[in-house]
Image (tube, rainbow, N blue to C red; front, side):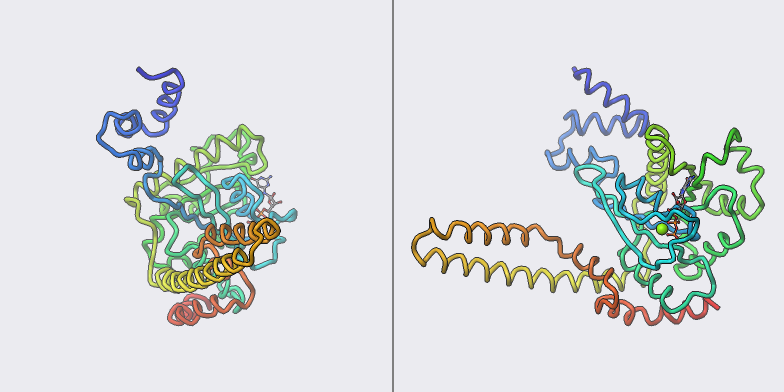
Length: 345
Ligand SMILES: Nc1nc2c(ncn2[C@@H]2O[C@H](COP(=O)(O)OP(=O)(O)OP(=O)(O)O)[C@@H](O)[C@H]2O)c(=O)[nH]1
Ligand SMILES: [Mg+2]
């Protein structure tokens, strides 16, 4: 028999997943299946063994991308700008948080990209940077639109996205409308019905996958709205059979990041070896007690280096202005630059 706590959990999970997943959950977590412990706990994750859910935020400047990113991440990771569209900065950023024991949420914020057909060289560089940060490819692109501020530029953004990344990218796009409070008493169905044809087409193009959020809402409404968005993300990932969007550009970026991660790992291994050597020679100097502080410092330095994730370090290098790693990605994406020239005019 299950404890009452387990029953509560079962009810919640049933609500979220439905019956089939529920049976799977019972057999795996409660222990009726022949799984080993590791498989059990991995299967218990709503996200299976995906490990990392990569999400990219898209949309015109000032629509609330960063604010939405912060709400999904439950932290103030991205700069939110008080004025509408005042960001002006072109620095793509990323942040992450744990969704459960096995799954990280990884969000790339792209300030106002893809929203003009006349980007300067700096903007193009930022597009490449944001692609590289989300390598090997996002599971879901969240296209953010502010209620009541839909323009032709939004349609253009999706067109540009498809022209750069390919038509299939649309299968990974969901729309999130911010400023939900502006809906007032209007029902969601009415909102869709009364939307301009361009927006209705866009919703249809995105397989009717849309959600609403008031980024400035209270805790309870934020909880309900972000949880609905996560359900939508989950459904999109299921619809795409757990395959993230990728193409040559993402794969090139991934390869360069992997090469850099390997170099970083080698550098780390070398400096750990040097630290260990230093430790041994200190110990050989005799009185270990007087050297205690130095030995402890070396131990904690070794622990920190062991803890470091080379891939993460590589992505951090991409954020640096004039990073040579970004230069390498740009070089590798020369063909992409050519396609930018044809897409943007
Ligand atoms: N009332 C209300 N304000 C919002 C909502 N979402 C965002 N805002 C506000 O709109 C402003 C712009 O939000 P940001 O998140 O910085 O917009 P952004 O899309 O990241 O803008 P860029 O970085 O310039 O591309 C901020 O003042 C937000 O607090 C919302 O749902 N309701
Ligand atoms: Mg922003």
